[in-house]
Length: 159
Image (cartoon, rainbow, N blue to C red; front, side, top):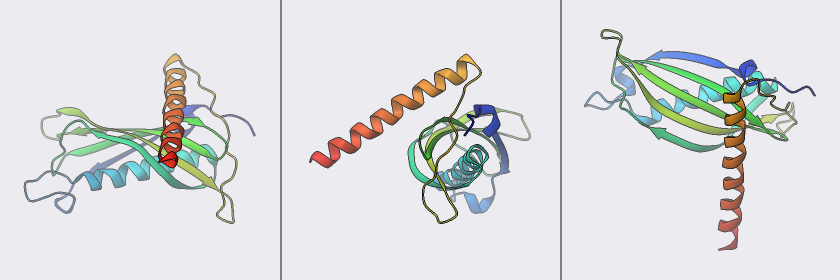
């Protein structure tokens, strides 16, 4: 199975946030943003694996700025690293006010996605072969996050 570059999984999505996405104060619910993040991660990981995928874990999801009704969200996702059947996907989200053009980085998320075979069981995925220094840095950071997840799981099992 040939490795792929992160750019081969690159996914961009845009969405105007509606009244149904928000609370009575006009702030978009974090859950609405989370759903879009999960969708972007799913597309990026399907592009990488060329298989159906499921979300195994949301490793982190940080909100940096609020999103309001009428803002345009732009999401970018790509696979940062792949292991046996799982992949880490980084998703970044920006909001833009379509009237003023003001743009803010609102969300960063890391998700672990697992590729499935035709029977719904985990299956092998291609490796990741970074092209740039930035992609190599993201790959190293993905390994660090994976080690932390594994250590946390071990620590919790001991209790």
